[in-house]
Image 1 (spheres, each protein chain N blue to C red):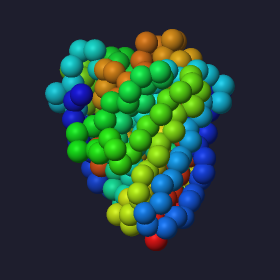
Image 2 (cartoon, rainbow over the protein chains, first blue to last red):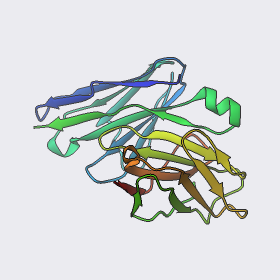
Image 3 (cartoon, chains in turn brown, yellow):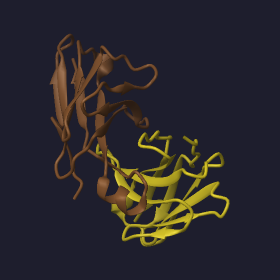
Length: 121
Length: 108
């Protein structure tokens, strides 16, 4: 149980275009999802917290207008990279809180998606 | 959330126990310790978590010191498939901030 699915798994786009990445919780509802970015040989960097029905909370230094986040339902959050440029090429990973594990232990175990690799030409 | 410090890399012989340390000296009382691992080009995979007591599951054991300032993840019988980057995270809330992790290489 507690599967998080991302789509697409990889995407190539031209500079200046926008790309949308979807993050779905397949067998549980997630009021909160999290978006990370990972550059080659680096750790994951938290970009923003996606809240169902309200605005996302962005980490310091992350451009809100550049990375649009929409969390319109309890099972879907989307990240749109607007006017993408080569420096936006990265591995984007989403996660959601696992309610089953959280209920049992009181902790907030996150389940991560498989990631979406974006290459901007 | 408390900052963690992990060795950059470690090697382990196949079949032997892999012991991965993590320092979190500024951890607060309500922060949990979580361990995840990331195999190349995949999303992080949950391994185990704990608060005060040692924990064990089908994947690993987590040993937390009495003062909670450090912990050790133990993979009892490492296999080649355990080669990955292992992240130790301490958090009291939903947000997880990843450190640099330990790159574990299991050697045949």
